[in-house]
Every structure is written in C-alpha cells, then in structure tokens.
Image 1 (tube, rainbow, N blue to C red):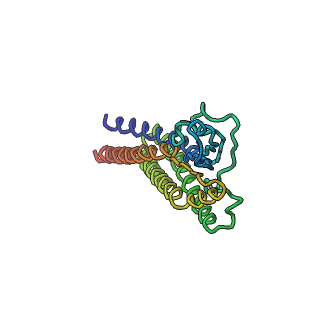
Image 2 (image 1 turned 90 degrees about the vertical axis):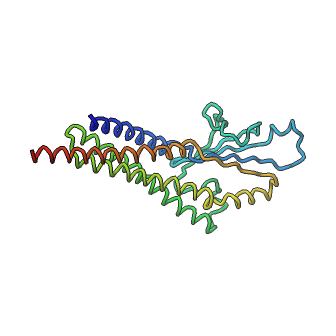
Image 3 (image 1 turned 60 degrees about the vertical axis):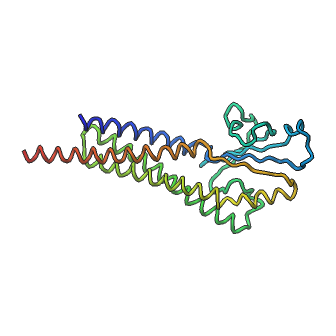
Length: 241
C-alpha cells in the first residue's frame, strides 16, 4: 500500500515537474522590462499618458518588444498579458543575446562579450535540465510495468539531477540580470538623448514556473529513489524466504 502511494505521488510530482519545466523552457517570459522614454520633466499631468513606452519580454527562444504609452501602472506586469499586448509585436532570436542591450551599439564592449559567454553557459544548463527530466520521465514509464527497482532508482537520480540543473539555471539567470546584463550602462547610454529615460525590470512567470518546477522534480526524485529501495528490500526478502 505504501509502495503504491509512493509511486502515485512520485508520478504526480514528476509529471508536474516535466510539464512546468517544458512550459518554462518554451515560453518567452523569463524577463519583463519596460522602457519609459520620458525626455522632459515639464510635462503636465494630462500629458503623462502619451509618454512612449517600449515593453520587452524574453525567454530561451525569443526576445520580443512592442510599443505603447505610459499609463497608471508603468511598473506593473499587466501590459504583458496576451490581451493587453499590441498586435504589432517585433521578435528576434534570443540565443546568446544579453537582454536588453542593443547588439549593434555594444558589440565591441568586453561587458557584452562576457554576457554572451555567460548566457551561453546558461543555455547549456537549460538544455541539460530539459533533456535530463525528459529522460527521467522515460525511465519511470519503462520501470512502471515491471516494478524494476534499478530503473526507478536511475529515474529518481535523473529527476534530482534535473532539479539541480534548473536550480543552476535560476541562480545564473538572477546573477545575469543583476550583474551581467549591464543595465546601468544601457540606461546611461539612452539618457544622453533622453535625460529621464528609465527601465523597470521584473522576473516573469516563466522564471517563476522554473523555480516552482525545481521543488516538484526534487520531491519526485526522492520518492522514486525510495520506491526503488523498497522494491529491492521486498525482492531480497522474497528470495531469502
């Protein structure tokens, strides 16, 4: 009975972990940024609504942006919901792209090159995490019909490994945004033409999904290791008797 409960919850948490990681991997909302292009401090209250704003969101595959105007909630993430986005949205490949730095104006900087290398390692860890958790799911599916203790153990190790890979992905992303993306120089560069230019940055729901999936992957891995160990004990007891 306890073995079946372990299998059930292991399968439940493992399925949730796989689904969440795939959603985080495939969606383009790891980072949300709002550029407010306010170039004068002498605007009346009724003019604040027409301040041009550029909304950015980016993930593993795509970096997208669309134009808008400043409303009452420039710092909020409501403008990034699908129903609030502009129909004319521009997107470009986000591979090895340090967001939100403009490639053309920063190609020669050492900061840009360091960010590209760092983003490359982040990309590798992301791919390893996705591949590992898919392999873990495949191993558990193969183990279930035969109650194979070795496959359960290996699948559990793969789930834990995927959780560790995605933990590194999340931590590296935080470091990348805070230290490597060079937002301060990006803002100062635009302030030359627009003195009150400002950028608001938020972590998006893809980032939150990945953080949540780590918990499910680690719990599923520990449960499947326990299931494999329990099956081994029962098998040894059956053989000795």
